[in-house]
Amino acid sequence: MLRLIDANLDRLGEGLRVLEDISRFLLNDAVLSKRLKTLRHSLVKSLGSLEQDLISARRVAEDVGAPTEKRVTLQHKDLPAMVMANSRRVQESLRVLEEFSRLSGEPLAGKAGEFESIRFEAYELEQQLVGRLLRQDKASRLKGLYLVLDTAALKGRDAVEVAAAAIRGGAKTIQLRDKLRTKAELLTVARKLRDMCAEKGVLFIVNDHLDIAMAVSADGLHLGQNDLPPAEARRILPIDTLIGCSTHSTAEAVRAQAGGADYVAVGSIYPTTSKEKYKLVGLDTLRRTRSKVLVPLIAIGGINHANVQEVMEAGADSVAVISAVLGSDDVEKATRRLVAKMK
Image 1 (cartoon, rainbow, N blue to C red):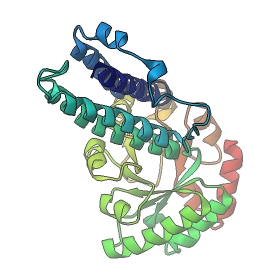
Image 2: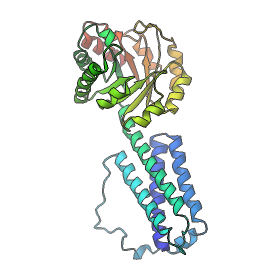
Image 3: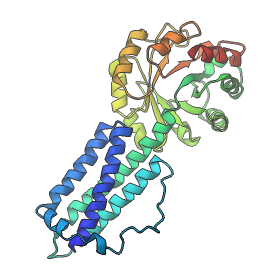
Image 4: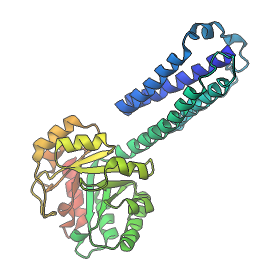
């Protein structure tokens, strides 16, 4: 029995350490790292005085399940696959320990409830880690030009055709912002844009409308300060959907990141004609925010060909524009000019 307990505790501890290191070093997530570390420590505490007996009971050379030269080593496809594989090791080991803790008179008797509680927490942690990694891959693509496809600024032009021209010019992200259409009309446009962006390898973000974002499987949902909080949106959205948040100060950006935003937009950097009411924050706020947040930082508001370079130098990962592109008769040319200046 001691050998069985020892083997499962070893698998459990090893799996948790892999997950903890991913959350700590690859995701820079202090909260997840601490939770995983706490789990490992709680397991050590559960052993009590058993640890020495477990080590003494090891019979590695006699273990029929020990690795051999002929064993084929499975390769992980990517980091999410690695997380899922190690999570399974953790969960399966916990289930074994839980079941054998239900036997009276055995070393772990009476600890089934502890192992069950840890097992359910492991299920939740797996979901959070996989989601973070999937979104991190998407968030890493938030570079370059981010076009806010505002219906009001289209002036009757076809949204899909304009977006296609911007993509040809080098836009890397398209956000659909619409205050005019009905939900039914918006859904049709969003589906067309999502399909085109997927084909071109461009991120597609929906502004405000969580239901539309989910209906078309958008890459992300962008929220304002008066919209659904990021933490609430995260409970509803698929785990791989990005959440972006508009902010107007460093403090708001820090709160958005803590609340689960995968990227933050800061603005307005300069005076803008795209919004009737806006808060001017300037480059200093952008610089301060860059030093405080780890997630991708999008600068927005009054950015054009003349000032885009200084915005990038202030720490923006990407710049979001409306009139600088949509205000031109030649969308592709205007986009290409901006992108060249950014580089």
